[in-house]
Length: 382
Image (cartoon, rainbow, N blue to C red; front, top):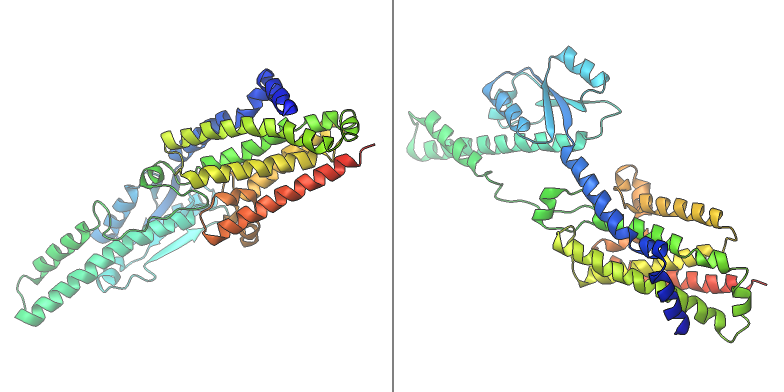
């Protein structure tokens, strides 16, 4: 254990090495809050053409305008086309004539036409939002029609059927406030967080950012293998089990300090409610750290020049981070990317039952293979 304590002491009293081990904490918090702030300021501009011009169409528009992240531009057909061609709006919603009449007859299909351009990025989100507003209105209309129908069937023709319909409509519409009677609480990607966290942002994944910066830090801190590859290792391997013990103890000291940074970042996740924390997440972070160190050690044995090692490590960390979904969900770009992303190490933090256990086993096997490969490579040094 002498090598372990010697390396640990060296890391603690070496400012640059110690700084880079705790770099993932500062980088995760800084960029996490930065991305969160950008998302809070993000707005989606849309244009609305109202050809119906009734109280119902105006109410739909008013409901959309209440959404904090949507900016509505009232426009004519020609104005909307120009705004869309100039990319000044993300999409155009064309409310057709007889909109109120069709909704009153409980026909909501083909009442609003959607115009988009190749540069539209938030169409799906806004489309679902508009659809929810129409659903709310048609549900209330259908319920009110049913109330009047059943009442007249039982009591006969009513003189105040219009008043009854309006009261019924108002009552049904109020059932959506402050929230619908039935809701679905879902999460995307590796974010498995509660309602309070969802209100802040559903897109910022602190654990995803941590996974990227931790891998980057592991690549940097394992550069000692490249430095000692042609000088120390040829002498160490002549000793009985010397190479294996030397490699494990030196890497163990790095692992110990990284374990300390995991405790800190885990505590911050819990205190500021950045992620939903539990013992499973803590253990998965340790397993991910083992993989990152194994990957960096295996990669370091392939290089004799620091510059090439740093560049390759940086590219590899960014590539795995992007495809693995550390910054955003690549599955939205292409279906095949979603399949590739599901096998990246960052997906370890997704809660998908038995598949998660399989991924843990696969990652541990990959780590073991990388260690065997690294030892084999180092033993070949002459």
